[in-house]
Length: 189
Image (cartoon, rainbow, N blue to C red; front, side, top):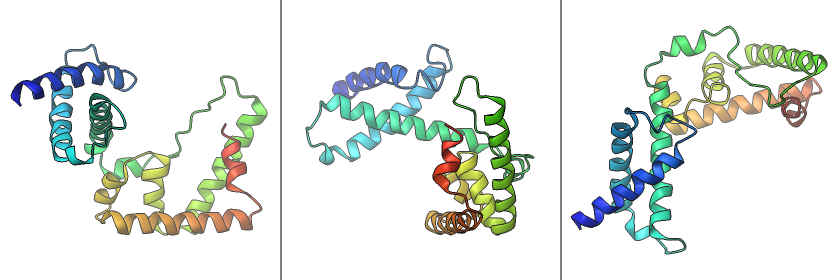
């Protein structure tokens, strides 16, 4: 069993380098200890869930998928771990959308800017302080739900309900203003 785990660890390390190449510097010296932590946690998950392996793919493919998910979750968690709630909410404009267009026209930039101003106004006018904080943390800044809930001192279920209610309020207000969420999203594509 020990040999099998060491072999699996070696295979997972090789796969993790490829799976995280766009997320972290996988050739740097700091990657090895980080990857060891990810793999150790993944091995625990793999062993605990062996009974769920159905054989629809190779075992190593299944194990790689678990390992990459564990690593990405931990990387997201580490990203938000040392930031205070005040820092995250104090940005003048919390929206950090990057234009997917290589060269948006001045008209497109002006339209996006107007939309962002209007969205921020709607968020300020329609949402409670907790709802606003939740919207800034998760959909806008991309913080994982578990981390955001912890920052706000809530459990996950209560946080999901808070986000749901905030989204409904925003949707109703935007519809009242003659705007459709699909149209807004299309402006940023």
